Length: 233
Image 1 (cartoon, one colour):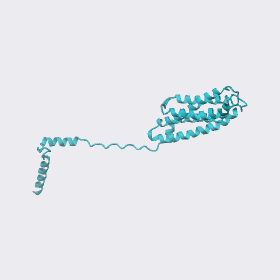
Image 2 (cartoon, rainbow, N blue to C red; image 1 turned 120 degrees about the vertical axis):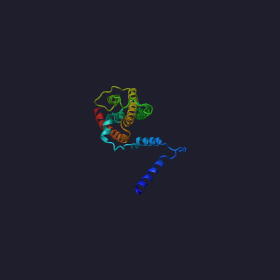
Image 3 (tube, helix red, strand yellow; image 1 turned 90 degrees about the horizontal axis):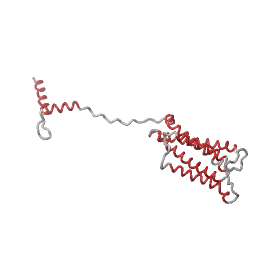
Image 4 (tube, rainbow, N blue to C red; image 1 turned 135 degrees about the vertical axis):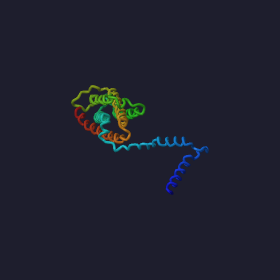
């Protein structure tokens, strides 16, 4: 007899809780209670926000596959530059009569002019980046710089035994040096800027390290070729 009484008491307590007054003091009706229960049952549990996937260590090979063309352009730019500067360009002299101009011709028109125009070319990338990373025009511009090798070798270099002198005037050498230096600065800075844009954000550090390696590779290749070009004069 006690068990039914306890069950009835629990049932009465449950009904009393369901029929408690709402915040306005009005008792909840059975229909309102049923609707509340239905809404609670139908309400789906809120899904926890997905945690951002932690990217693993980027693969050097994967990053290289994305930037290999830009890295190759960087190698070729420095290869051309170091193959003739300063090994060949330092040997160019003025074709004018001996004097102050001929004395300071090479220090000014070779070294000073190169550094000024190289700095100017690097500064241009602060205002625009052309061509962009998806363009195939960049490799073409880089390959066109190979024309500077024969141009400088055919300038006024007295210490020669094989090649003729086709550009004896000083204006030729100054013009070649202007284009040579500004293109070197611009293309070097451009390739270094484009490489990080070709990879994912977490891969940019690896891309920068790879570009530094290829920069050194280009310097080594250019310095090695300078001995060959100097011997061909």
